[in-house]
Figure 1 (tube, rainbow, N blue to C red):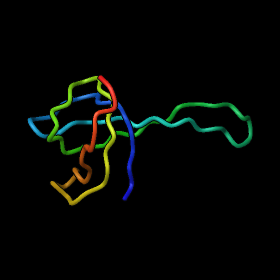
Figure 2 (cartoon, rainbow, N blue to C red):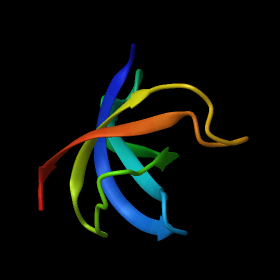
Figure 3 (cartoon, helix red, strand yellow):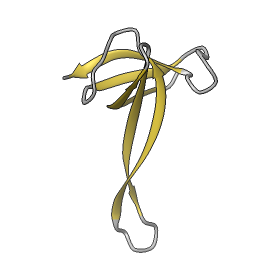
Figure 4 (cartoon, helix red, strand yellow):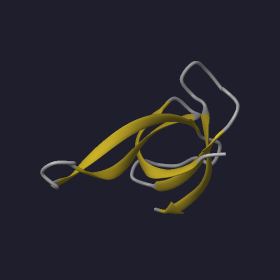
Length: 76
């Protein structure tokens, strides 16, 4: 079971949230650090708001693109 943490950037409908997960990557040759982000559509039963930090885990497919579920809110 994979658990990721990210920030809520959008609310889509009643039970769906869009979460951005950022990570820092180091370029192999030039050693410069830069951020990469990826967006996930997540099933939301808690009722989070835009800007909240949350943890989410993989779960059963709720729809074509929603295969994650929010487990807890880290902070507001």
